[in-house]
Amino acid sequence: MTAKPRAKDAPERLAPPHRRILLSVRLTPENADALRALAGRAGVGPSTMARLIVERYIADHLSRSRRK
Image 1 (spheres, rainbow, N blue to C red):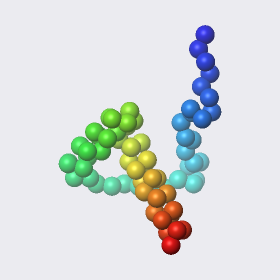
Image 2: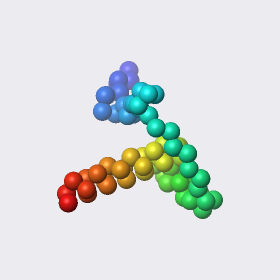
Image 3: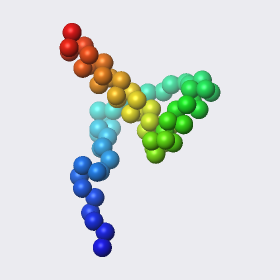
Image 4: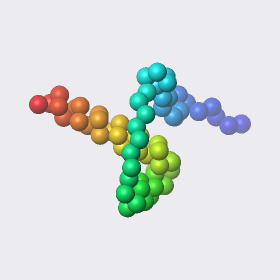
């Protein structure tokens, strides 16, 4: 019998389509390779890794600006 996944183990749900922003970026081959390598180490795809990097950067920037 397998245990049901707990809510905290579930992947984060994306915002509804009307609340999302689609970004398109061009990476140098070196940066694209680095992104793929980071994603591979984290066990996610490159798009997910890019989204996580952007989200973490924004959260960090907001927390720093609130401290000033």
